[in-house]
Length: 380
Image (cartoon, rainbow, N blue to C red; front, side):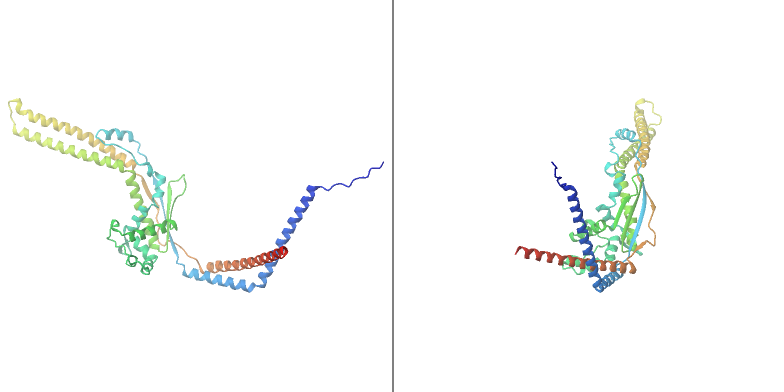
C-alpha cells in the first residue's frame, strides 16, 4: 500500500524571520521615502531656507558686533604646607607655662585651600579691599559696577534705595544697608555661578593650583586674581598658625613679665647692698641675700623661657604654609571675542538648520493629520 507523502510543514521560525525582515525592509523603505520627500520639499522651498539662513547670518553678525570682548587673567601658585615635627616637644614646653597646644586646624588642610578661593567672605574682602585703579583710590566692587553698567540699571528701578545705590570707599561693611548687602550677594553669585571665577588643582600629585578670572574689563580681571590670592593666603596662613601663634605670644608675654621681675630684683639687690656697705651683723645682710636669691631664680627662669621661645618660634615657622605665586597675570591679557566671520558662519548654519527642521516637522505633521483623518473615517 502506497503511502501518500504528506507535504512538509513550513518552518514557523523561518517564516517569522522572513516576516520580520520584510517588515524591517518596508520600514527602511518608508524612511528613505520620507527623507526623499523632505529633500524635495527643501529643494522646492530652497529660497525660504536661504532667506532664513541669511537672517541667521545677520543675527550672528549683529551678535558679534554687540558682544563685548572678555579678558582672562590666570595665576598659578604652589602650596608648600609643612607639618611641624616637634609638636610633642612643643606641648611639653607650653604645658610648663599653662599653655595648651592645639596644632593647626584640620579643617584647613592643603586641599581645602582651593575651596577658600570661592568662599563668600574672601570674595567680598577682595571686592572691598582698597586698591589703586588708574591712579585713583577705589575698590574692585566699584570697578565691577562700572564695567557692567549696574548703576544704569539701578537708576531705572522703581525702588528709591536702588536709584541712589552707592558703595563709598570709606564706608565700613558692618554699616551696609540691607539693599547694599543684597547687591553684594548678587555680585558674588554672578562671579561664582556664571562662573567668572574658576579655581582648581592641576593634579592630585602636584601641589600647583590655578586661579582664573574672566570679565569684560582687563584691569578688573588682573587685579581680582592678584587681590584674591593675597586675601586668601593671609587668611589661610593666619588660620593654620592661629593656635601656635597665640601660644607663642602668651609665652612671650610671660617671659617679659619674668624679665621685669629679674630687673626689679637686680635693682633691689643693688639698693640694699648700697644701704649696708660694711654691715657687721649678719641680720643686716638678709635683704641683700634675699634679693640675690630672687635675682638668681628670676634669671634662671627667664633663661629657660627665652630658650623655649626660640623653640616655639621655630615650630611656628615650620607650621606656617607657603603659598608661592609661580605665574602672575601680565598685560595684555588673553582676549576672547566672537569674530564677525565666526558669527556669520554660526548664525547662517543655525538659520539654515532651523529652516530644514521646520519643513521636516511640517511634513510629518501633515502625515499625522492625514493618518488621523483616515482613522476617523474608518471608525465612521
